Structures are given as C-alpha cells and as structure tokens.
Length: 94
Image 1 (spheres, rainbow, N blue to C red):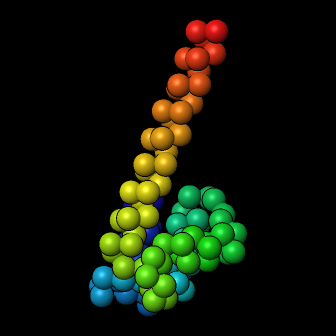
Image 2 (image 1 turned 90 degrees about the vertical axis):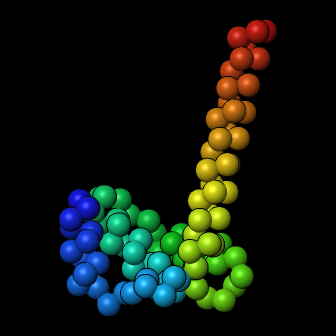
C-alpha cells in the first residue's frame, strides 16, 4: 500500500513542501487514502474535517494544526477509554 501511495503522490500535482496544504489538497489526499484502504469518506465529512483542522481559518492546514488535531483526537480517545473502563468497573462492583 505504501508504495502505491508514494507512486500516486509522485504523479500528483499536490505539493506539501511548503508546510501546509489547502482544503482541496486535503480532500484529494483523503480520496487517495480511501482508494488504497477500500473506505469511502463522504465529501462533506472530508470538508468538515478540513475546516475543523484549520484552526486559524486561513484556508490552509499547516503542520502544527495537523499535529494539534491529532493530539486532540488522541486525548479524546484516551478519555473515552478511561470513562468506559470506569463505567465497566462500577457495573461489576454493583
């Protein structure tokens, strides 16, 4: 899969060398990822993700915004797992 994505990337006009990507480039990357993972994310969901990742609302997602988004999602996931574990233990204790 990695080789296919790299091949597609080389053939693409998208350049992320500048340290940020546009909303259109993010959409293109999600479509490319979907082709290689047999999953489809609806366009409106991709655009909503891109808008939410663009923290300073300049129409681009820079590397720091990208990292911050995944930090937030990771923390949310950890909190959710901890909450479920706490709920499960309270059910067992009852």
